[in-house]
Length: 284
Image (tube, rainbow, N blue to C red; front, side, top):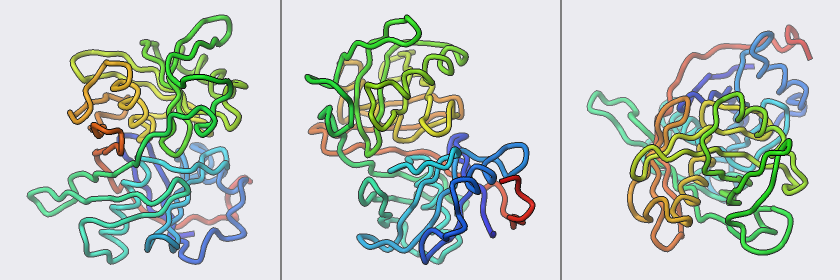
């Protein structure tokens, strides 16, 4: 299997061109084997580039545990760069279809002619509890819950996939421990990505993400989008103004539209290496 390895702010992916759709042999077990960091290539997930129905291209997101996600903000930047540099797309602005809808991508070139960053329109946030989906009734903001006896107050936001943003600083071990419990809480029927965000300046936050299907990740693009939306809605940041989020893998820039009609994410996408995998050699 031919692949190219990318990373977007430390969130790493195996990108595979599969224009005719997901192959039958791309089983959940095979995905787990490829993403294994000891016996496989190692990645947070596999991104398949398929032909789209609503846009020329479709991105399928397969998490490291074999599950499928609706959208990936860091991953789509990597796919956009792959399309621009290796699949003959000549435009700097183009659309990519995902399970969370069609997303607009814009390649931003550096002075040296290489891709400097990719901006992605993540779409409008979803705040209705049933649509996130999040159990219970009432507003999706300032929701009280607990994990292992510790109380948390979080904000439910969907960016095409479910997130729960907690404005509380925690260390990595705490994010791992509490994130694992909160992610699979009965509050979230399809599980959720958990963001722990700490304000470190005006419109500037430090964020750790526990991602469903992956665990702790160095970055999460849709999680950054959800955090920016929650920051605006709780009065911690201003809509229409740039918001900086520092994740373990590096910074991302977000802007939430004043009318909440969309969220723009901008950050790097780096091609790391490429190669061929002997699938028969994998421990499946």
